[in-house]
Length: 271
Image (cartoon, rainbow, N blue to C red):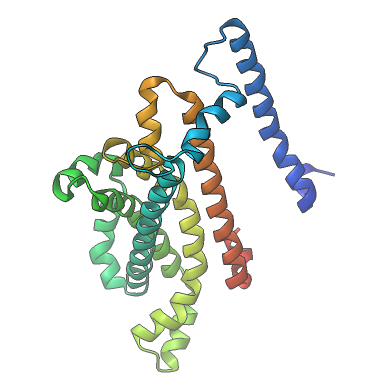
């Protein structure tokens, strides 16, 4: 049987997917143990015990200046910024994408502008945002919105514009207005695509968040990573990076599960 025709069961998929991760962990432990055997003070590849010891204070000991548990304060601050940025970007992308996708004159007028904004590297706009919006939360959230919304708008617009013309004609035959076509025909078909687009946007959103926190912040996962890098504190940086990856995986899984529950009929088209 050809490999292209082989289907993997869920249990086997979990086992197969864990193999590369375990191999990477074993490779890291092997290399780190070798480095520490040669130099017990090595900071580049800390051992698990060293990472646990370095993280214990951030996890369980209140900071002397703020009285906060720094790890959890960083996590809450980053998730709050990420949630607000993704929420605003998603809502804007859905509304604008529906309008552009359903109304050809609007698409012809605003489509080039959206495309132009989407191709600008968002990180290049970070100094402009900090100058115009200040160094507070607004600039960080705006970077996520600007980085995510235009790309998502283009995706939703293309998906809505690709709705079979027969559906639009049938709705008009039944007396539907442009607004009703947008809400009753386009919106239900755009929602599963929106979930998929948000899942794809999670990675870039984290990049924009970490970049903004690294430059101007006093709390957050990105802030902490770039703060301790000057001390070569890989025993803190690596756990923080792993934690960010776990948060992203959990968010992606939650969106996947929610999409399957709400839109079971669309799963064949979204995968």
